[in-house]
Each structure stands twice: as C-alpha cells, then as structure tokens.
Image 1 (cartoon, rainbow over the protein chains, first blue to last red):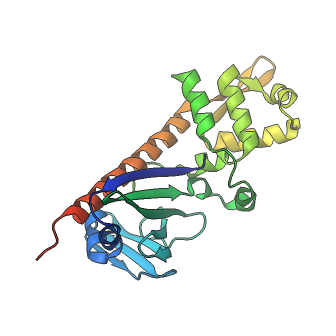
Image 2 (image 1 turned 180 degrees about the horizontal axis):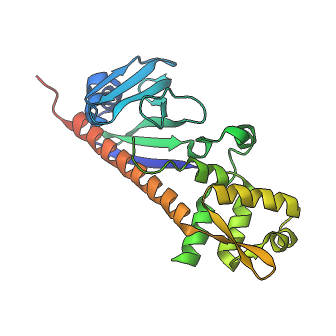
Length: 143
Length: 110
C-alpha cells in the first residue's frame, strides 16, 4: 500500500461524456465547487481554480490521454505553484462498464510533502509498504 | 484545499521502514529506551536515536525519563490526525465524483 487515496464510482453515461465533464473548464469549475476554473489541457499546461473564499488553487496538467486518463499535480496550499515537496498527484482513469463508465481517482504523494532533507531516500522507497500498517498497529493498541 | 494541519511531517516520518518498525514496536509493546530498541531491531543505537528524533519532531513519539533511562512512547494523536486528514480528503473526492456523475448524467441541452 502507498500513501494514496483511491476512490471510484460508476457513472451512468458514456466514457466520452464523462471525459468532457472531467476536463472542460466550465464543468471542472462546477464539480470542483470553484467559482472559476481554467485548464490548458495538455501535458505541462496550467490548471487554475479560483475560489472567492479560499483563493487560487494552482495545478499543472501531467497526462492527457483522451478519453481514458487525465492527471495533474496540485499544490497543497492556495496560491502556491505545484512543485516537489508541496504537491500531490491526482490521476483520473475512465473505463467502460456496461452502458456506463467506471471513474476512478487516485491522489498520491502525501509522504513527499514538506520533506526537504530526505527526498532522495524517499524516491528509492516509493514502493515500500505505507504508513497504514503503523496506523493499524496504533489503532489496535490505543483504541 | 483543507484547513486541517499539514500532515506532511507525519507521512514523511512514516516513509522510512526503520521508523515504521520503531513506531510499530512502541505501539505494540509500550515505551522503550533507545538501547532496548537497538537490541530488538537490526540497527545501531545511534541510528535509533536519530529515528526517534524524527518521530519526536513529527509529534509521533515523546520521550520521558523513567528512573535512569529515557523511554520513548507513542503519541497516537498525530497518527489519528493524519488518518482524519486522509478521511477528509477521501470524502472530498467522493463529493467531487458524485458531482461529476450528476453533471455527466444530466440530459444534454437540446
């Protein structure tokens, strides 16, 4: 297990339709609950969400493989450019499921946040078991 | 975006397998000194001390004096906080996926 969150849902709409909602700026603003969203939909393109309440969320598009995969890196803090140590990776995958679409999202990279001195060590260890085993041990003994 | 505390230090501390071993050991068998931990784990006492310093800084453990030795114990709050943070993030994604589904399932404007 990694330092990631995985969620999925089945959408009663074709893959192409889900792709449009997922990647077109007008829709993105709506499902992100942002007042405005702008996306330059290509690898390296900028992705900006504006909330009147929270400020500006900055992300960078990572992969665009219509209509199967869309990913971006976003900064944890409002107004901060995504960069190693301050970003996580969000990856959406779409797959046909019956008449609908299986939509999955994975957000990963939490353990790379704010980790100046030991980044290289972390890169070597990306695949080791995550922190969940520790959580479980603690939950078992302290609950 | 979230207003919860940044869990970065907790996740970073837990990214190291030796530190996870130390923490798991402390969680399972209770407080222990660096010397005891070094005897039980395949690392030197000096390395254990360094790992405990990282765990302390992340709020995952704390040291207290017990007679002549310094023992280290788990502070479950930081882990609980990180777990709660993950749960919150997961809930945000559930909300967003539901919103995507609702938009995609709307009849196309004619």
